[in-house]
Length: 182
Image 1 (tube, rainbow, N blue to C red):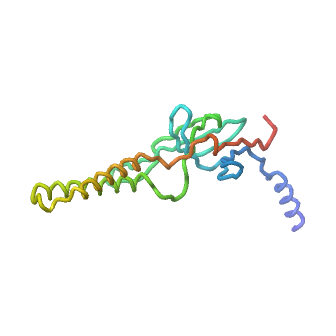
Image 2: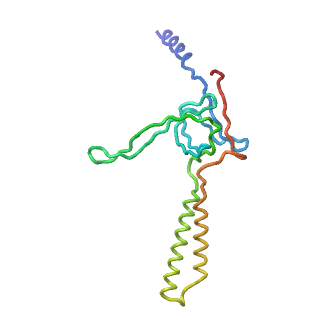
Image 3: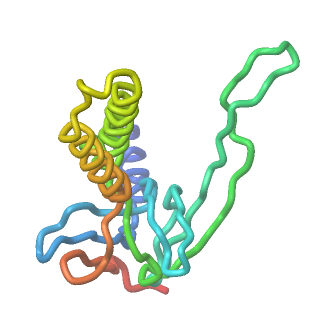
């Protein structure tokens, strides 16, 4: 009996070997930063300017087949809210249509820090203006100038977008064809 189970298991094992799939490598110079294959999530901006955050269903013949899920908070009949998938969209893009790839993981957000710095600068300027109106002798023009500089630096930092990496000189995308069947 054990021999029959072993033979049947070996026959199924022979048929269960997975076929290799194509994948895409995201490189910085010659070092691989990330690899994308069927089943992984990817966020990128296309050459036409569209931003897409989707799941890769298949990569075949230089083309990414993607499935985007639209997830929203909706109200039920009982009046409470649940998070549910409202719709799904299917896309396909050639890998050369990727202009920039979104960074993944936790990172320091320069734009948010710039917004906080700008808000602090505006608050200091408002406080200096109140001091100028209330008691002209205690007004500090140096503090007002420093607040204006902080506001300007905060504005410039808030305009920085470090959430994606542009494909170009330093970063490249390489398509790897793992099988030869078409």
